[in-house]
Each structure stands twice: as C-alpha cells, then as structure tokens.
Length: 170
Image (cartoon, rainbow, N blue to C red; front, side):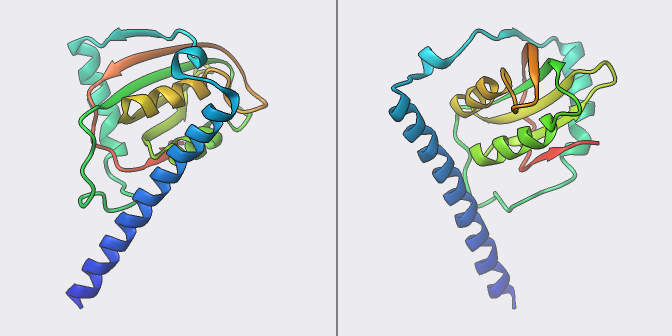
C-alpha cells in the first residue's frame, strides 16, 4: 500500500508541473501573437520594501493560509527567484467577481497565495512564485475581471511563506 501512495504523489506532482508549464506556454503564445514583451506591457506599480513591523503583521496574515495544501509540492523544487508580494487593489473591486477571477488567474499561472475583501472596499492579494510570473499577475490585477474598475494598485515586497495553493479568503 505505501508504494501506491508514493506513485499517487508523484503523479499529482507531475500533473501540477504540467499545468504550470501549460500556463507559461499560453503566456508565451499570447505575447508572441501580440508582439508584446514584458517591458511594453508593464505599467508602473508602487513598490517599496516592507518594514520589520509590517513583516510581523504579515506573518500573522500568513498563518491561516499555511493551514491548507492543494498538491504535494515536496517533489518539485522551487525556482531560486521565488518572490512574494502583498497587494492592495482599490476601485470598484468588490461584488464583481474579483476574488474568484484572481484565484483562477493565479492558479493558471501556477502561483500560490490568497485574496480577500477588506472592510474599506479594497481587495488584498498575497501572491508568491517566480518573480516574472508574479509580475504577470500584477499586470492582470491592474485591470482585473470585466466588471471591475481598478483605480489603484499598491504592491509591497514581502518574504515568501512557501504557500502551496491559491485560495479565496472569506
């Protein structure tokens, strides 16, 4: 029986890696079709390094996200350029499916983290993964799903928490 479980874990890890590769391939095809390079597509994002005090607050927020796991990633080594961003999106971003479509897009890109509504009307996103792919999600967040009207986006660099899935927080 333990051999069966080991084979299952390997198969799940391979399937997960395949989904990540497919998402990257779709991204390259879109960029090639429209002739867009990274520099041409990116709008500026307000970024700053997070202070030690804020990092302590972020650790509290990460705690509940670490409790759930989607797939066994122990068999897949993470790239060296893994980064994390804590993002605040303002505008008409609640009640328009923003959290759901952010989760869908992040999973398509193979990223980990979470998204939640804030009482002040903003949406907060914690995302981690390879830096170029995290930037891809930030590009998408600048406009969001079709019903959203994004007015501002603030991204802060934070320490990765080694999350393994992307989820919607309620």
